[in-house]
Image (cartoon, rainbow, N blue to C red; front, side):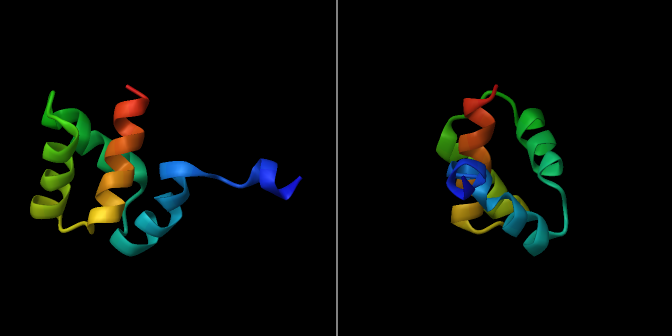
Amino acid sequence: MADELKVKGPASYFPSIEKTYGHPVTHWFDILNKAGPLKHMELVNLLKTEHKLGHGHANALVAYHLKNQ
């Protein structure tokens, strides 16, 4: 039953992202929404260069964002 409740995929990074960068994930999704129609790696690079996120965290946010648009 614990496996059924365990968060998997990109969302599993969300608690760490919020703790590390001090913003809720909705903050990052707002940034991605405002960035416009960029490709996956363009969005990842935006978060890395302009907001100093690590690659794994940026990639997780972008993957979740694009999947749920």
